[in-house]
Amino acid sequence: MAIALILAAGRGERLGADRPKALVELGGRPLVQWSVDVLASMPAIEQIVVALPAGVQVPTGTIGVLGGAVRSESVRCALAAAEAGDPVVVQDAARPLTSVELVQATLAAVEHEGVDAAIAATPVTDTVKRADGEGVVTQTLDRAGLWTVQTPQVFRRAALERALDVPDDVLAQATDDAWLIERAGGRVVVVPAPPDNLKVTTALHLALAELLIARRKA
Image (cartoon, rainbow, N blue to C red):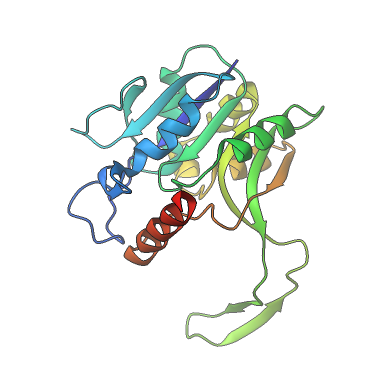
């Protein structure tokens, strides 16, 4: 049976919130509750561990741990608190519109032989340029084969444990946990995600999420 780790330790500074991002209201629920509700509804997931800021109440039906200073440190703390279970779903609380269908598709992808991780992602559609420190363009990248990475990300537990067994300075470099798998020589595959699997980072994203929720209810 699978286990799920929800990363909810962000402070929400870019959101301009007066509270931890996990507690910001969206559609009448704290942001973190959206991910909890989706994952808790799935029979394949037997346990949910949430990495939270200090002093935040643990969502009902989950295990709470204190989040780390960086993302992958929170993953390491949450995984250490989880009971036996494989594979491991890692979900950002900041992606409240993640669907059961997307989690299921990502779980299915990691079951293929030789796959260590499967990650939700979307193909890059904009032209991507590299610029120097003064804003001068130095290169235009070929966007073919480029993807923007999201969550859920699903890992074989043994592969994730090995990838996380690194010094703290290496963890601090990881902007997503799949990079740690890649760094260790593991095989990672992408799973196409729908356009509405957005990450709430700014007030604009929060307003857009509200509109998408209202549209779902209409």
